[in-house]
Length: 187
Picture 1 (tube, rainbow, N blue to C red):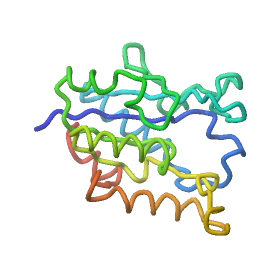
Picture 2 (spheres, rainbow, N blue to C red):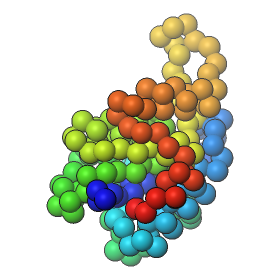
Picture 3 (cartoon, rainbow, N blue to C red):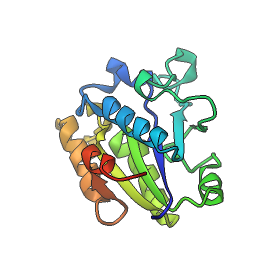
């Protein structure tokens, strides 16, 4: 079987802030924790990604002291943690080099938020030649993720934002899967 790594993107306490608006998938962190436990039990490669925003008002800006990982996915000593300042986990980090060095060809990705850092990382991973599995029920979107001003505004639900992002990734950049489907396989 092709070597596979789990990539957990930005599952941080700052996403509990009201700043982001309503969200979907309230079980996303729990599901990401289940995936992490599965990978750890198999002693398979895991990479944690933390967003450190440079935007002054963002809850992900380190000045607000809310950039810690959520308890469900807290890294263990020795598990790699990559810090980024942009949407892609590949920009400004050594993620690609680490994956190549480890012989990883498949990535299973989950995290926050679906249309931003998760989507950008999945697209870039595919463009770099990795096979990508995106775990839809271990990701979430927020209503703040919709900026509809370009078309005159209008409300969009977090679920619709999440689904639209996944629809655009599935088949071209990633294979969208559920946590149960992923857990049925060996990492």
